[in-house]
Image (cartoon, rainbow, N blue to C red; front, side, top):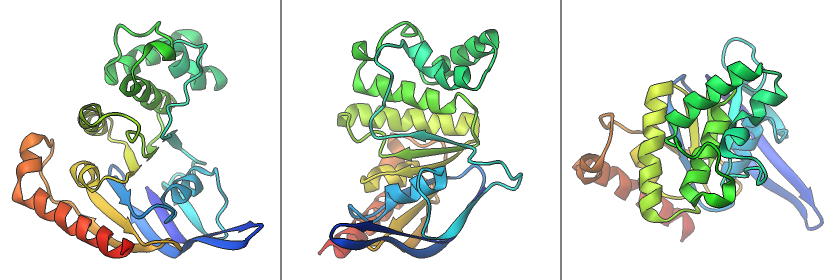
Length: 248
């Protein structure tokens, strides 16, 4: 579904050239949920933006799928970025309206998405009337509106409290299993990365490059028992040790 071929990225600024990503390659299969972790400034978000077409790589290329579709991705940012004057339903419908989807068809899609992300009853609420977790649910629904096969998520739960974050982790896992989307999730939480991912990609400090990929051999669906299992605890410990070594 996603082929990363020797992607590299350099930025030029007043203080000189900054190497954000050194060349590396990776393949992500259809239907995977791959977590990406690494120290701050290692190029995790830059990689997502290149995949989405929001940044141009200095060298290398991204190949999405096998059908030749151009940028079939949805993007969920750290901030929900909802239009404050539009209701939940209107925010979710926005990409459908801009794509020219007929009103009746769009309304049905919005209804399905609201049910999928657990926002039934809040269709007519404005963003200011929602909690942080509810805003992110709406943002996820909006990203899924065009039914993209790939969903990119850049630290989407970092701004919410721990209990809300754990709830949203379970919701994302449920949505992934139900929709079969290919998901790339950038996170600073090793626990979140291990709990959600089928694989965990660990990036090195800047200049960013792929240091190691871990296969996550944990049963699905996952829950509280998963977090208490020796396999999960061992993986989290190994990831945390690697992260600590890279920042010392």
